[in-house]
View (cartoon, rainbow, N blue to C red):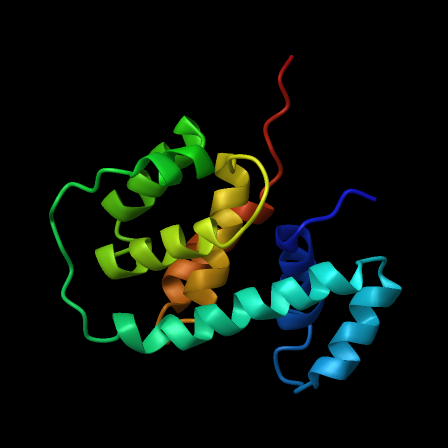
Length: 156
């Protein structure tokens, strides 16, 4: 099974975070469930490290002013995002789903993932996870959930 940290994070979001939003579960229990679902211990550990870093970064954006400056990607950031994914990120900022500080959190979390450049759909997952970890982002999360979970169009 080809797995990545993003696959573990998707599984956690779809099967644990959303399904059990009222129920607190400890990490050992979650680790056991993820292992049972077929994820390796290494990827599970990296996914929890990714989430811990996301939560630790939260205070950095609270109260930070929004910026109207144009963002230019570094060479490393360009290597991590497809052109379509970068366009999707810009669109999310333009429609008000993301502000500049949260965009930077998304770019930081993208850099923390390994593998090839993310496509737009994978980037939306990262954005959803970042927003879900932020207070007062219910409307933005709802918007993103509709985009992430909606079925792709059938091409004839």
